[in-house]
Length: 137
Image (tube, rainbow, N blue to C red; front, side, top):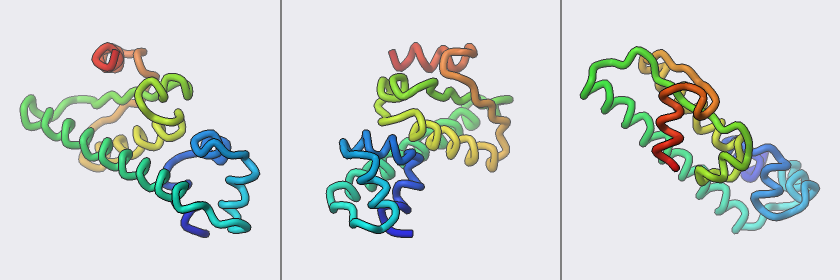
């Protein structure tokens, strides 16, 4: 394990997704993951910045869920919408559906640990996720 591989694992990127994100060949990402070549500082910084942004989004979502509980009582179910593809994820400001999925999964884990009933559905497929889609339009 090296720093690049650790950050890649945390990000939720596939190696192909990371190659697209960094605008390099897949073989380059494989060499960074395998430790044959060291990833450049800028590449490490880009992944670290993305992970920090993911962490902030997760913290903000959990804070919103907790605020809803405080204002309205504990909701019966928290619905989280996942992106169907990379295009939808990019429209939301995420570099790929796999990264967005990592964010949604982490929010779901935190909410479940806090005692919420969590449902994950495609964005727009339920009234709650459709409202979220409309809010982001």
